[in-house]
Length: 589
Image (cartoon, rainbow, N blue to C red; front, side):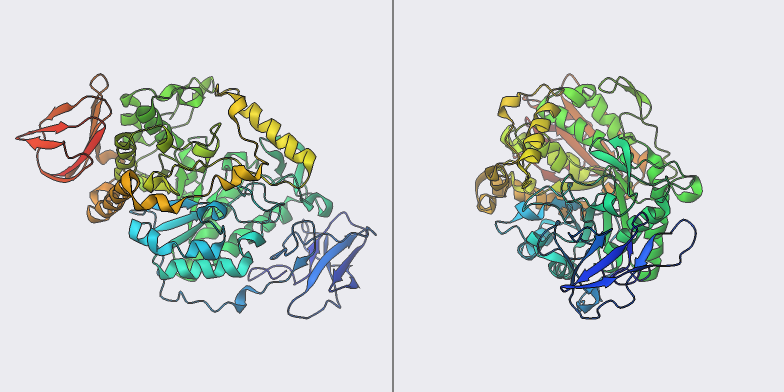
């Protein structure tokens, strides 16, 4: 149990309700004694005669129970989350990234990937082999879906129960260090998706050790984490130490904080504010930017306001409203939560203001939702946007991507919107070459009853969206996982290669023309015609013009040099632009 720079000793464990604790290490037993600690942190146990071998397989026997439990702060779990922990020394890795200077969100492009389905091998080492491709694509950050320890062989990662470990199937913690080193050598930063709002259903032994959870206080995924009840001082320390572990020991450049709206915390200082302060402290300590991005469905910009302006001081947050507005306008789908986004007027508002619902009525929720963004406090780059991501694909009934139902022109319009928006664009693995493989919800719970419950619960989730439950794949079927792997052969030819070249051109254009990413909220001018199906927006001297219809449209008062066009039939005629159906053009005046 090698921890971050400060904190408990090597084998110390927090078990405040236990009457006796024995450390079992390398087949031997070592009685533990309680430590003297400050008020609010009682319950720590230590082993005075603990072994000092470099590599130790160990666990804890609580109150005479004969089955040793893995360490809540396990760095390695070579036999799985139900078995013994193994020590891991992060300082043994000789880092090669001394020349890495880090990156900021502003002007960057993020690429979201799942290690297990990104390559045929499904490992971190194999993913590292694709970093050159990602650099050529124009990616600044890779964002890895959760890699923490979970039960089974494959999973999205959000069923994690061992937050300090790296899943052995991906290569474990040493492979993770190699991946980060390789990413930095390729000029790419690493953002790690972390989950602090719940724990998975199998292998969660934290309640055996102490009050990590609020029993009976459930969120969407299970019991809430105890952030403000008795014993929560140590629980918060457990989370903050984990956050620091990624930023320090693994050299990651940022964290994506999953579903922060499910972090139930009524303390005067919210844990998100502590996250922001810790991120700033590690940044100052290392001299490198450390980026914290919140996923939240609250549309609450307080997450990204500075702490001295009564905010939490995070660096970014997702804007689902952008995704929904793009999705509806390119696909025509208006069921479920898409129902409020059916017009170019909505897209125009999101481009200017960041959110549609900023205090407006949400018909899906049946209430008013969100609050306006104070443009004087934050930059548009603090909003991370996409036209596809793991949730928006994987939480569809069959995990179908846009490429499975839209034309090349429609995909191109979505790509132009995302990569020229005022915000920070995020791509989902494979979208850049119109991958035809789905990305479905998959699990590998060894327990049959848990697998059955997961499959049944999945079907119920789709009822409100109006999708046919009969077409929902079984998440426990190994084929559901296998069919979700990318087919890299597709990227080499036809419309797949054509779209890939467009993505490369768009990321290059975004880098070359700083107005797109550099200007503030108040510097986006948008006009549109819902009936004719066109929208145009300007950022400084760069104007983006898009046709969302099946007919050619003619736009007047257009001047400048065409930087990029998605259709060769699009062209300037004096001060007018003829936009081919489902196409876009980018001009500089």
